[in-house]
Amino acid sequence: MDFFNLITSIEAHKIIQKKIGIYKAKENIDVTESLNRVLAEDVMAPEDLPAFTKSIMDGYALQGQDTFGVSEEKPQSLELIGKVEMGKEPTVTIESGQAANISTGGMMPSGANAVIMVEDTELKDNRVKIYSSVSPGENIIYKGSDIEAGQRVLPKNHQLRSQDIGALAGLGIKQVEVYKKLKVGIISTGDELIRLDEKLKLGQTRDINTYSLSSLIEQIGAVPVTTRIIKDDYQSLKAAIEKLRNEVDFILISGGSSVGTRDVTYEVLDELGSNGVLIHGVAVKPGKPTIFTMLEDTPIYGLPGHPVSVMVIFKKFVAPYIEEGLGIIDDKIKVKAKFNQNLSSAPGREDYLRVKLKEKDGNLLAIPVRGGSSLIMTMVEADGLVKIPLSREGLSVGEVVEVELFK
Image 1 (cartoon, rainbow, N blue to C red):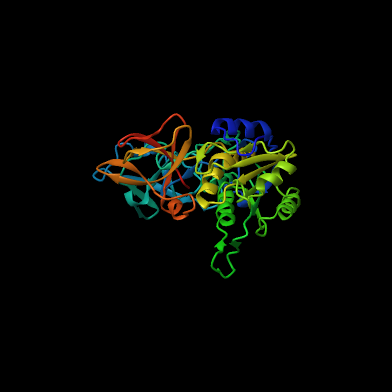
Image 2: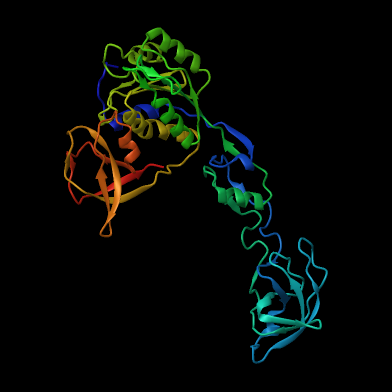
């Protein structure tokens, strides 16, 4: 692989896809710990939900046909024969002309097919006077009407949400089989970098990329594994990679991917990579000096040092492959918006613009956030990314663009 030989994003993805063979390991975990995890198998209902026909109102269980033609002017009187105890199976059977007191969630007694709301009744001397009619099936929910036993509740590769966990709990499912979380190692390099807890001196820069990458990795459901900051030294970087490779599934190195005298990432990865460096330079902005190689089965990325470049390259060239290993189907949220100005871009390059969304006169506008790839506030102020394809040389005012929203 030639040093800094630009290829298109399509070519880069082809190389990465060909080399990364992700084995999706599985594990069983408690439902209480399953939020945002991805199912490794279909979940089938072991029982009906609800498990019995129940009332959805406080009132009286009765036979709906007993109330036909009833009104405030022409009420009907029914015999009160008992009460349905909450959490217990009813001991009464409802016949024509009878009713039983029931609360919301109570099990319907045999013979009853409807519930009259307590507001439409009057109780006196064990007789219930009915002032409104109800149809059979009214104010009740039938056994299995929400979920039937044997029904597929959730499909394989589904990322679990809070409402899904509620459904699993309702069915008595205590554990689910999910894909194991992948571990992603992060190495930040640079003589100028200091930790967050260190006092900043002139000429030094606080490490941003370790924290932004860790958050992005956690956001998609993987586990970040961080290291100490590595200086721009060949042997130090090589030792850090070799130590980390046995602990993680991916390695991300930020900084040192360009062509400066202190940029050693290429040299180290060219030596360690099973077939040398496979990618060094992608025709995109930001993030042109991106590196990719494989150390046996471990994918290693050399990311640019600028914070914006790191985050954009992670989203476009790293995250899709981590998500694949986690079983996540593309879940990116995209919206259409009108570009609010004319903007040119260099031919032969794919540009990713940070944009802010604003509604005006019933239209959603995409407004470019200006600033270089070293300015983290351009990501803070942006709502998403707009891609200018390789074949285009810019965007026109009023043009409808697709915005990939940040989460």
